[in-house]
Image (cartoon, rainbow, N blue to C red):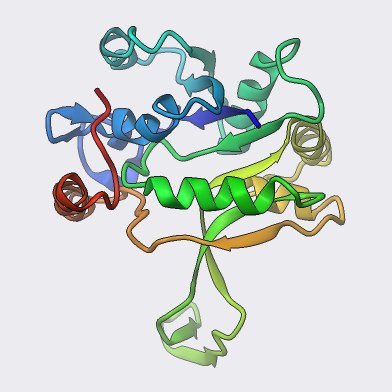
Length: 241
């Protein structure tokens, strides 16, 4: 099989609390986004990658120079929302990807995707009629709070999952789902939700909780530790060069 990768990277990461967007934060001498791209650029099944960046992004050119050896990374202009950026990334694949081709969408701020999780996703989803995503079962007790902060209820966590990335869907189906959502004025929080709105039911594939998303400086500390462990044990992450 082969697949295409779309990586939305146009966000500014306001919660990150730094002048540099989180996808470009330094992580062991490389930008976070380089680590996020690494498992795909090292995978012969990945036909090509499209990174969706902000129009005025001053950081990507330096990253791109370090990725020239791979030769399969192109860019598209980002939108105001994640879903708009993914739509633009899919449009950039028009004429290259067939409707039935698989497309993986992965967060630029997830630098610790284990290669085994990518293999599991591809292996389990490629025979599914809709597609699917990596997810982690909810492990903590969940509370629903009211506006004032008081607990309104304890939520039964049975059957609840935290959505991760990559998310994997057919090119034609994903593009149609996102275009339909946009036309209806709806903004999905991830690709699976857009697919769900069409009435389809994606599958979840259990992924590692180490596949963290960088949202704060503390997350960078955790990511460094995970990457250090991966270098010695074959776990999360891996060198992007």
